[in-house]
Structure formats: C-alpha cells, structure tokens
Image (cartoon, rainbow, N blue to C red; front, top):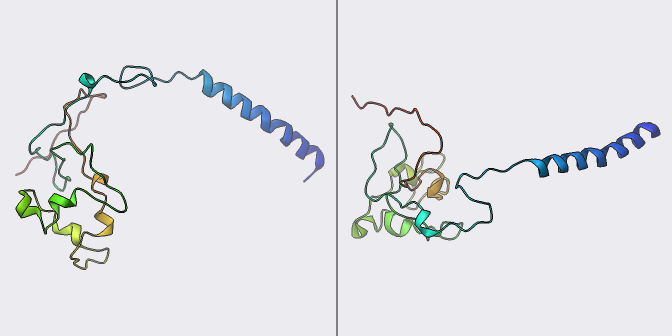
Length: 145
C-alpha cells in the first residue's frame, strides 16, 4: 500500500472510534421494567408464574412450563427437568413424560436417554407468567377442526 494512504487510514481510525464512543454515550437507554439499570426490583413487582396446564395456541407448539424453573440447573452436566420428566421416573413423579421425539438422534434412531439435541429444555419450553404485555400482540390461535 502507498505510505500516504496508510498514514491517512491510521489517522482516521482513532477519529472513527472516538466518534462511535461519543455516539454510544449520548444514546438514551430505556428500560422495559420501568426503573434504572442498576435499580433493584422489589419482589412485589416480580410477576408470578402461572400454575397449571396452559392451552397451546397452534399445532406442534412446545408446551409451556406450568411451574417455576427459577432454581433449576440446566447445563452440560445437569438437567433438573429430567428428574421428573424423564420416561424412567415420570410415572412415579406424576409428571408428563417427554415426547418420544426427545429420544431420537439426528438420524431418527431411538435412544434410551434424551438426545443431545433436546437436552436444553428451555430452548423451546418456557415458563408462562402473568405479566402485562410489552408490545401489542395480534396473534390469533389456530382452530382445531
């Protein structure tokens, strides 16, 4: 590369970085929870999980979790959901058994343990809470005819 071009680019980099930093500092961050970023949210403002089975809105929708999972450990070593929902213990725990699709590998082979592709339950299943909507939702559930 030409030396004057290199010098120009080297001089331009700090200017671009500083202007980007200044722009980021001037942006106003708005919170969805109605308080400052570092403000502690009082417990009475935390929305409660809806208990009991929740109706699905469309075919093949993953079931919503009808209980709190706040203290559940789900990582590469442990999945506490399986302590109740795995097929080996679901009957004695009076919990719904995982779908058989959770025991199929990528090639469709049946496994005796949950497939690695289905191990992290909260990829698809989420707890439902009774909270006000943040954005208007015009979704209409499908009709089961």
